[in-house]
Image (cartoon, rainbow, N blue to C red; front, side, top):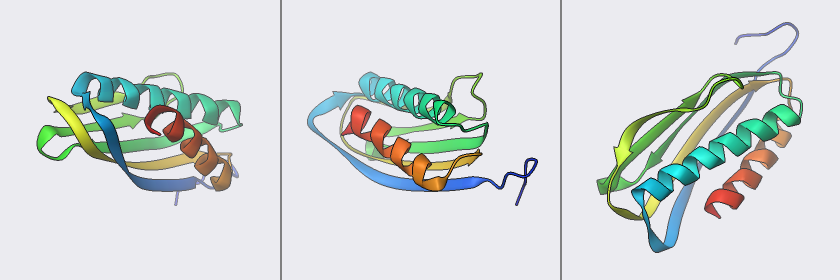
Length: 120
């Protein structure tokens, strides 16, 4: 376990299904994912998080492909790998968060808020 100063990392992970009433374009799913990550990291910073160890995730759209995302700094945007194609009805989003100077219950609340806003 890495300790930054006197801070022990806060670890949070989640896996949730995404079901779209109307099939969503692959480009719209990527845009929603980008907006979700941006909002989560912005809210973490505004809530006192001092450092991102790593926020890493996967949007798995089955036969339509996948999109991996990763962010390690408040100063940089998320990096993406992979590709989702065509229109998507179902997907799964898995995320792993390692951050410092913020409680897990706050991370969980901020995650759920951003998830509901962009995927709910």
